[in-house]
Image (tube, rainbow, N blue to C red; front, side):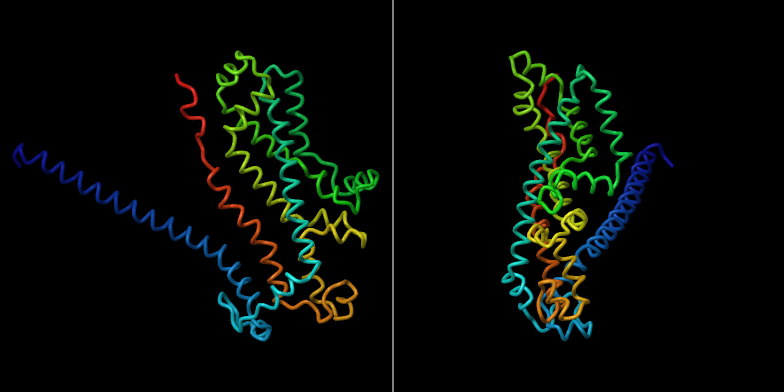
Length: 311
Protein backbone atom coordinates (compact mmCIF):
# COMPACT_ATOMS: atom_id res chain seq x y z
CA UNK A 1 0.00 0.00 0.00
CA UNK A 2 1.39 3.41 -0.95
CA UNK A 3 1.73 6.31 1.44
CA UNK A 4 -1.07 8.15 -0.37
CA UNK A 5 -3.45 5.26 0.29
CA UNK A 6 -2.91 5.27 4.07
CA UNK A 7 -4.89 8.49 4.82
CA UNK A 8 -7.69 7.18 2.61
CA UNK A 9 -7.81 3.88 4.49
CA UNK A 10 -7.83 5.69 7.82
CA UNK A 11 -10.70 7.88 6.63
CA UNK A 12 -12.59 4.81 5.42
CA UNK A 13 -12.08 3.15 8.80
CA UNK A 14 -13.34 6.26 10.62
CA UNK A 15 -16.42 6.36 8.40
CA UNK A 16 -17.03 2.67 9.06
CA UNK A 17 -16.65 3.16 12.84
CA UNK A 18 -18.95 6.17 12.67
CA UNK A 19 -21.60 4.17 10.85
CA UNK A 20 -21.39 1.40 13.47
CA UNK A 21 -21.72 3.93 16.31
CA UNK A 22 -24.60 5.67 14.54
CA UNK A 23 -26.39 2.34 14.05
CA UNK A 24 -25.79 1.44 17.70
CA UNK A 25 -27.11 4.84 18.78
CA UNK A 26 -30.25 4.38 16.68
CA UNK A 27 -30.86 0.97 18.23
CA UNK A 28 -30.45 2.44 21.71
CA UNK A 29 -32.85 5.25 20.83
CA UNK A 30 -35.38 2.74 19.52
CA UNK A 31 -35.08 0.67 22.70
CA UNK A 32 -35.60 3.75 24.88
CA UNK A 33 -38.55 4.84 22.74
CA UNK A 34 -40.10 1.38 23.03
CA UNK A 35 -39.77 1.42 26.82
CA UNK A 36 -41.27 4.92 27.00
CA UNK A 37 -44.12 3.82 24.74
CA UNK A 38 -44.86 0.84 26.97
CA UNK A 39 -44.82 3.04 30.06
CA UNK A 40 -47.15 5.48 28.31
CA UNK A 41 -49.55 2.65 27.50
CA UNK A 42 -49.48 1.53 31.12
CA UNK A 43 -50.62 5.02 32.12
CA UNK A 44 -53.08 5.75 29.32
CA UNK A 45 -54.89 2.43 28.89
CA UNK A 46 -56.38 2.34 32.42
CA UNK A 47 -57.71 5.86 31.95
CA UNK A 48 -59.19 4.94 28.58
CA UNK A 49 -60.82 1.89 30.12
CA UNK A 50 -62.35 3.96 32.92
CA UNK A 51 -63.59 6.54 30.42
CA UNK A 52 -65.06 3.87 28.16
CA UNK A 53 -66.75 2.14 31.11
CA UNK A 54 -68.30 5.41 32.27
CA UNK A 55 -69.83 5.96 28.82
CA UNK A 56 -71.06 2.39 28.24
CA UNK A 57 -74.34 0.71 29.02
CA UNK A 58 -74.58 -1.49 32.08
CA UNK A 59 -75.29 -4.70 30.15
CA UNK A 60 -71.97 -4.48 28.29
CA UNK A 61 -70.11 -3.88 31.55
CA UNK A 62 -71.74 -6.91 33.17
CA UNK A 63 -70.59 -9.05 30.25
CA UNK A 64 -67.07 -7.52 30.46
CA UNK A 65 -67.17 -6.46 26.82
CA UNK A 66 -65.82 -2.93 27.35
CA UNK A 67 -62.10 -2.30 26.97
CA UNK A 68 -60.99 1.09 25.61
CA UNK A 69 -64.00 1.98 23.44
CA UNK A 70 -67.52 2.58 24.81
CA UNK A 71 -70.30 0.20 23.86
CA UNK A 72 -73.92 1.24 24.01
CA UNK A 73 -73.14 4.90 24.57
CA UNK A 74 -74.79 6.13 27.75
CA UNK A 75 -74.34 9.51 29.43
CA UNK A 76 -76.67 8.81 32.33
CA UNK A 77 -73.78 8.29 34.75
CA UNK A 78 -72.38 11.78 34.10
CA UNK A 79 -75.88 13.24 34.23
CA UNK A 80 -76.41 11.58 37.60
CA UNK A 81 -73.11 12.83 38.98
CA UNK A 82 -73.64 16.39 37.73
CA UNK A 83 -77.21 16.60 39.04
CA UNK A 84 -76.58 15.02 42.44
CA UNK A 85 -75.89 17.58 45.14
CA UNK A 86 -73.55 15.26 47.04
CA UNK A 87 -71.16 14.94 44.11
CA UNK A 88 -71.23 18.58 43.04
CA UNK A 89 -70.71 19.84 46.57
CA UNK A 90 -67.85 17.41 47.20
CA UNK A 91 -66.11 18.30 43.94
CA UNK A 92 -66.40 22.04 44.58
CA UNK A 93 -65.26 21.70 48.19
CA UNK A 94 -62.26 19.60 47.11
CA UNK A 95 -61.21 22.25 44.59
CA UNK A 96 -61.47 25.02 47.21
CA UNK A 97 -59.66 22.88 49.77
CA UNK A 98 -56.87 22.09 47.32
CA UNK A 99 -56.30 25.75 46.45
CA UNK A 100 -56.31 26.84 50.11
CA UNK A 101 -53.99 24.06 51.24
CA UNK A 102 -51.60 24.62 48.35
CA UNK A 103 -51.31 28.36 48.98
CA UNK A 104 -50.85 27.84 52.72
CA UNK A 105 -48.34 25.01 52.27
CA UNK A 106 -46.16 26.77 49.70
CA UNK A 107 -46.18 29.97 51.79
CA UNK A 108 -45.08 28.12 54.91
CA UNK A 109 -42.46 26.20 52.93
CA UNK A 110 -40.95 29.42 51.60
CA UNK A 111 -41.03 31.06 55.04
CA UNK A 112 -39.31 28.02 56.57
CA UNK A 113 -36.66 27.57 53.88
CA UNK A 114 -35.60 31.17 53.26
CA UNK A 115 -34.14 31.98 56.71
CA UNK A 116 -32.07 28.79 56.59
CA UNK A 117 -30.09 30.19 53.64
CA UNK A 118 -28.43 32.76 55.93
CA UNK A 119 -25.16 31.39 57.27
CA UNK A 120 -25.25 33.81 60.22
CA UNK A 121 -28.69 32.66 61.39
CA UNK A 122 -28.51 31.99 65.12
CA UNK A 123 -29.42 28.40 65.87
CA UNK A 124 -29.59 27.55 62.16
CA UNK A 125 -27.90 24.17 62.58
CA UNK A 126 -30.20 23.23 65.44
CA UNK A 127 -33.27 24.24 63.41
CA UNK A 128 -32.05 22.12 60.51
CA UNK A 129 -31.60 19.22 62.92
CA UNK A 130 -35.18 19.62 64.18
CA UNK A 131 -36.50 19.57 60.64
CA UNK A 132 -34.58 16.41 59.81
CA UNK A 133 -35.57 14.79 63.11
CA UNK A 134 -39.25 15.01 62.23
CA UNK A 135 -38.61 13.16 58.96
CA UNK A 136 -37.41 10.06 60.81
CA UNK A 137 -39.47 10.21 63.99
CA UNK A 138 -43.15 11.14 64.29
CA UNK A 139 -45.82 10.69 66.93
CA UNK A 140 -48.04 8.49 64.79
CA UNK A 141 -51.73 8.33 64.02
CA UNK A 142 -53.16 7.83 67.54
CA UNK A 143 -51.35 10.79 69.16
CA UNK A 144 -52.29 12.95 66.17
CA UNK A 145 -55.92 11.97 66.56
CA UNK A 146 -55.85 12.71 70.31
CA UNK A 147 -54.20 16.06 69.67
CA UNK A 148 -56.83 17.10 67.12
CA UNK A 149 -59.54 15.90 69.48
CA UNK A 150 -58.26 18.06 72.34
CA UNK A 151 -57.93 21.01 69.98
CA UNK A 152 -61.59 20.49 68.94
CA UNK A 153 -60.62 20.13 65.28
CA UNK A 154 -62.27 16.77 64.61
CA UNK A 155 -65.22 16.83 62.20
CA UNK A 156 -64.16 20.29 61.01
CA UNK A 157 -62.39 21.38 57.81
CA UNK A 158 -59.39 22.46 59.90
CA UNK A 159 -58.51 18.78 60.35
CA UNK A 160 -57.87 18.62 56.60
CA UNK A 161 -55.85 21.85 56.40
CA UNK A 162 -53.43 22.25 59.30
CA UNK A 163 -52.05 18.78 60.23
CA UNK A 164 -50.31 18.30 56.85
CA UNK A 165 -49.86 21.90 55.81
CA UNK A 166 -46.06 21.59 55.40
CA UNK A 167 -43.64 18.91 54.29
CA UNK A 168 -40.10 18.84 55.63
CA UNK A 169 -38.90 17.15 52.47
CA UNK A 170 -40.28 20.02 50.38
CA UNK A 171 -38.66 22.52 52.75
CA UNK A 172 -35.30 20.89 52.10
CA UNK A 173 -35.89 21.03 48.34
CA UNK A 174 -36.82 24.70 48.55
CA UNK A 175 -33.81 25.48 50.73
CA UNK A 176 -31.47 23.68 48.32
CA UNK A 177 -32.87 25.70 45.41
CA UNK A 178 -32.41 28.94 47.36
CA UNK A 179 -28.77 27.95 47.89
CA UNK A 180 -28.32 27.89 44.11
CA UNK A 181 -29.25 31.58 43.82
CA UNK A 182 -25.97 33.55 43.53
CA UNK A 183 -25.01 35.30 46.77
CA UNK A 184 -23.88 38.32 44.79
CA UNK A 185 -27.51 39.09 43.91
CA UNK A 186 -28.49 39.23 47.56
CA UNK A 187 -25.35 41.17 48.52
CA UNK A 188 -25.99 43.74 45.80
CA UNK A 189 -29.57 44.19 47.02
CA UNK A 190 -28.44 44.51 50.64
CA UNK A 191 -25.89 47.17 49.66
CA UNK A 192 -28.77 49.10 48.07
CA UNK A 193 -30.60 48.92 51.42
CA UNK A 194 -33.03 46.07 50.66
CA UNK A 195 -34.50 44.28 53.67
CA UNK A 196 -34.58 40.45 53.85
CA UNK A 197 -38.27 40.46 52.94
CA UNK A 198 -37.61 42.62 49.89
CA UNK A 199 -34.73 40.36 48.86
CA UNK A 200 -37.06 37.37 49.11
CA UNK A 201 -39.88 38.98 47.13
CA UNK A 202 -37.83 40.69 44.42
CA UNK A 203 -34.93 38.27 43.94
CA UNK A 204 -35.51 34.79 45.33
CA UNK A 205 -39.15 34.27 44.41
CA UNK A 206 -38.90 35.38 40.74
CA UNK A 207 -35.88 33.10 40.26
CA UNK A 208 -37.56 30.22 42.07
CA UNK A 209 -40.68 29.87 39.92
CA UNK A 210 -39.70 26.36 38.71
CA UNK A 211 -39.32 24.91 42.21
CA UNK A 212 -42.36 26.81 43.49
CA UNK A 213 -44.48 25.42 40.64
CA UNK A 214 -43.15 21.91 41.21
CA UNK A 215 -43.74 21.92 44.96
CA UNK A 216 -47.15 23.53 44.49
CA UNK A 217 -48.04 20.67 42.18
CA UNK A 218 -46.84 18.16 44.79
CA UNK A 219 -48.95 19.80 47.48
CA UNK A 220 -51.99 20.09 45.21
CA UNK A 221 -51.84 16.47 44.06
CA UNK A 222 -51.31 15.26 47.62
CA UNK A 223 -54.32 17.18 48.90
CA UNK A 224 -56.55 16.32 45.95
CA UNK A 225 -55.79 12.61 46.22
CA UNK A 226 -55.84 12.49 50.02
CA UNK A 227 -58.71 10.79 51.77
CA UNK A 228 -57.15 8.90 54.71
CA UNK A 229 -57.14 11.99 56.95
CA UNK A 230 -60.76 12.72 56.09
CA UNK A 231 -61.63 9.07 56.70
CA UNK A 232 -60.13 9.25 60.21
CA UNK A 233 -61.07 12.78 61.27
CA UNK A 234 -64.51 13.29 59.68
CA UNK A 235 -66.58 10.59 61.35
CA UNK A 236 -69.68 12.54 62.40
CA UNK A 237 -72.75 12.61 60.19
CA UNK A 238 -72.70 16.41 60.08
CA UNK A 239 -69.12 16.32 58.73
CA UNK A 240 -70.16 14.67 55.46
CA UNK A 241 -70.39 18.11 53.85
CA UNK A 242 -66.61 18.34 54.29
CA UNK A 243 -65.90 15.07 52.52
CA UNK A 244 -63.36 15.50 49.71
CA UNK A 245 -64.10 13.86 46.39
CA UNK A 246 -61.70 10.98 47.05
CA UNK A 247 -63.46 10.03 50.28
CA UNK A 248 -66.81 10.23 48.50
CA UNK A 249 -65.44 7.96 45.76
CA UNK A 250 -64.23 5.55 48.43
CA UNK A 251 -67.71 5.40 49.94
CA UNK A 252 -69.30 5.05 46.50
CA UNK A 253 -67.22 1.96 45.77
CA UNK A 254 -67.73 0.66 49.31
CA UNK A 255 -71.49 1.09 49.18
CA UNK A 256 -71.77 -0.41 45.71
CA UNK A 257 -71.63 -3.86 47.32
CA UNK A 258 -74.38 -3.11 49.82
CA UNK A 259 -78.04 -3.81 49.42
CA UNK A 260 -80.48 -1.26 48.09
CA UNK A 261 -81.87 -0.58 51.55
CA UNK A 262 -78.43 -0.03 53.09
CA UNK A 263 -77.37 2.23 50.24
CA UNK A 264 -80.53 4.31 50.63
CA UNK A 265 -79.90 4.68 54.37
CA UNK A 266 -76.44 6.04 53.60
CA UNK A 267 -77.89 8.71 51.35
CA UNK A 268 -76.95 7.12 48.04
CA UNK A 269 -79.21 6.14 45.19
CA UNK A 270 -82.12 3.86 45.96
CA UNK A 271 -81.25 1.60 43.04
CA UNK A 272 -77.67 1.07 44.23
CA UNK A 273 -74.51 2.47 42.71
CA UNK A 274 -73.80 1.05 39.28
CA UNK A 275 -70.35 0.53 37.88
CA UNK A 276 -70.88 3.30 35.34
CA UNK A 277 -71.47 5.80 38.13
CA UNK A 278 -68.34 4.58 39.88
CA UNK A 279 -66.31 5.10 36.70
CA UNK A 280 -67.85 8.53 36.10
CA UNK A 281 -66.95 9.51 39.66
CA UNK A 282 -63.38 8.31 39.07
CA UNK A 283 -63.15 10.54 36.00
CA UNK A 284 -64.44 13.54 37.94
CA UNK A 285 -61.94 12.81 40.70
CA UNK A 286 -58.98 12.41 38.32
CA UNK A 287 -59.35 14.72 35.32
CA UNK A 288 -59.29 18.13 37.11
CA UNK A 289 -55.90 17.56 38.72
CA UNK A 290 -54.52 16.15 35.44
CA UNK A 291 -55.40 19.41 33.70
CA UNK A 292 -53.02 21.25 36.03
CA UNK A 293 -49.93 19.49 34.65
CA UNK A 294 -49.83 21.15 31.18
CA UNK A 295 -50.32 24.57 32.75
CA UNK A 296 -47.35 24.13 35.11
CA UNK A 297 -45.12 22.34 32.64
CA UNK A 298 -43.68 25.59 31.27
CA UNK A 299 -42.22 26.35 34.70
CA UNK A 300 -40.22 23.12 34.83
CA UNK A 301 -37.14 24.77 33.45
CA UNK A 302 -33.68 24.60 34.92
CA UNK A 303 -30.91 27.11 34.78
CA UNK A 304 -33.06 30.22 35.19
CA UNK A 305 -30.20 32.03 36.94
CA UNK A 306 -27.71 31.46 34.11
CA UNK A 307 -26.51 34.80 32.93
CA UNK A 308 -27.97 36.66 35.92
CA UNK A 309 -24.48 37.48 37.18
CA UNK A 310 -21.50 38.29 35.02
CA UNK A 311 -18.02 37.16 35.92
